[in-house]
Image (cartoon, rainbow, N blue to C red; front, side):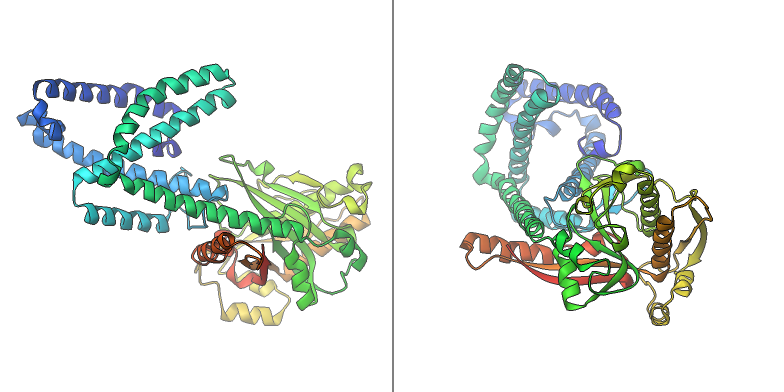
Length: 500
């Protein structure tokens, strides 16, 4: 029932539970109670003993099918919970496969599926008794009910805005009856009930270690940002060689310049002519509308050609690898440039206050505007994009090493041109021309490949959590480039050591 919330509407779940599930449960338990009142000695197998002989095998088949449906519901519920925990930063990155183009809640996670299979076989082979498995199942169910009642009391208070007294009465009433069942289930901990407790502790440790390490890494980035005054002092060229192309620098920071940028230019003093600091955020809502997905702003004044883009996804949104992200980003930046030119608030802002000022840019479709002419055509395996590249070396490399991850995929090749508009500002036209030329030269994705280590002065427990637990999880989970569907041929990773 809980798993189906990701596949059907809430109204259909309510109707099915109120008119089908709940009446059947009440009638079935009343029948067992009546049978046991006459036959108390058959308490160990009351369900099948209470079934009349002529309908025993049909009921047996239906019960077997119901067990299969129940197991599938548990599996899909686990997939949904893991995906939402990952979106909230509480679980390592895993592969999420969307099995339906129309129902976004239908997902499949191969790693979790294998873990569930191994745990199921281990428990079955280890216990070899339905009684022990039933004890573990009973403790897990009543514990979930006990915790859900407490969470429901919070919903009554904070979501429904009811009085605390009403929530307390609700909590005491249901906890009294559930506490009786919980106390009985706790008696079965030595006889198999310890399994859900051990599994809960293991998964809780994994979630806590991942969340703790991720927060420490984020705080390191936050406190080691590149000073904006230092960037402004370098001038528009940043004191380095600005090569043709667009550099998309991925970072978890929503403001400021990440430390990987200074680390890169310190060791290799050359960077792209157009820089875009991209931050992908998962917000705690199911969906983000296309009109609110992109937030565009500047990092430095116009001559620096440095921008910031925050891309927001809900935990049920699909990050598709359809080749449109670069085109949507260019279109959004161009719309921001034109909007900024006509906005007195942006034009009058001081250079030191550029970073942090963002504007919501619609990304529903890539369409022509008054200042940009957009032409589209399909190409197979990126042949057109290889020919359009200005670098002969890049053409030869891409021809020799095609993108074998998606062979034979026909992608749209979008070409931008600045429309002949006599009323356009000269600075805006030059900036749009630089953006289009950089797009034609190629796009590179720059990401930090970080190694997180605890400081020498840290406690032994912190070193154990960071150096062993968090490092193990990072090495055995999916990389951020894979999770974000970044093209392998355009990826540049910058290695850094984080001492937290």
